[in-house]
Image (cartoon, rainbow, N blue to C red; front, side):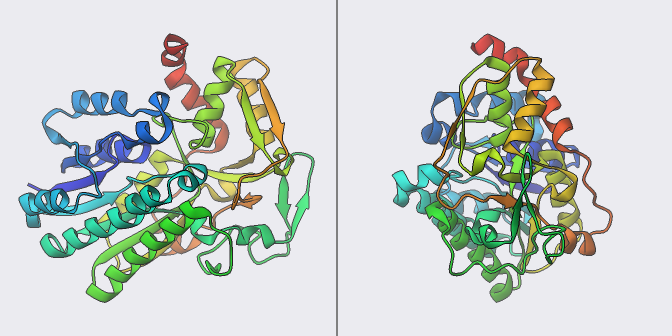
Length: 357
């Protein structure tokens, strides 16, 4: 038996990882207690996705409804499977800027303390396993907003002569910047993952994603940019664009492309690695551009309003440079761009959205 432990297994990345690695022959143990419903309400519940996983994967998937903050429960689980565990994919998190400010204690305990529990259990019971952490580009705070940006018709764009014109690399500082409390708790987790790798010679990697997306995302107003936008476009639900004239740019990486990143690392893991992981120049859009694409797909005008107030710590422009990962793992490449992603989200969810409406 070769076991993969996947936290947040009913969420977007966790469910994609569960399906993928089960097909690779691993026995998947999924940890998910539907905290997304606690954070964002019933519409964000992942219960539907958990049910789909259990039905489709059968005996290759074991669901465990425990909280990653419960150190004893995590240790008991890791002890049960021991050295059979070859892979840990940690996706469980409190993922929202706005929500973190409402309850900083819970945000930090989930994102930082939960990660520490998983790392220490890995060190104690399966130190040779690959440990993959879904970090975030928010560890860089709002430093990207100091880049020399130019206003275009539908987006902000960086000066083409700048060193980050092809995308932001891992050498950007994470210091002297406003992170949001969410960003700060993810910084703590990110540094812990690095330190366990370096200090204990463990095979750890932080993947600093931007907008992670795909058809299995339970998008909500506070988290899940493309999925929630597409849902609003399809159902006529009012949508609010926050600040920056709607020209803020995000790169978007499809969950399947990210899982392929994880697979490459799992096949040849390295110690204490850090990678930016996003859509890069291949897959990015501004808010206005995303709305235009969504309107084209649905054939209807989107019901949105604009607020002058941007979210604290939000980026005006983020495009990842995936070059470091591509140098280490040259067989990987992106397959999905933004129009393909939005079309797939719409096709996959439109019947479910109609029933909910």
